[in-house]
Length: 171
Image (cartoon, rainbow, N blue to C red; front, top):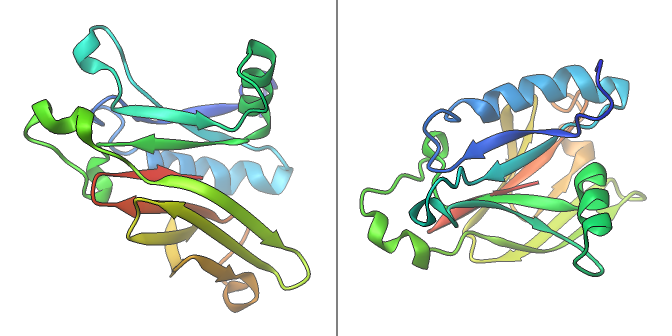
């Protein structure tokens, strides 16, 4: 809350060793910051100290064109989603690193917010399930959440994670 320049936090780092509990921390931070209209976006990043440690965790920036100004705006406004091929807490582990580069985490293709009906619908590719999370708990599954059905469970935020055979994506 003290530093306006902080726009988010890392929720996945490389192969999710030290970041194993960071999604729990993120949810706890969201519970505190969202009532104050302070958005804390979740980032997924490689810790690339070698080429073998590249391409496991990343952010998909939704940009009109790829330039530094648009990347910064996307990071500040949350027009991106985080993806990871390894997310141990959510059940995504890997023992054979030689195949990880072939993995394809879910891709989010559309998010539609219907303010009149209080529904959010998310579409994508390479996923089996969408989980909707509020206050750190899964409150619904499926492509669409009707917020009216979960009024008692949503205090300040709802986020989604798409789970596939080869990874997970968060928004």
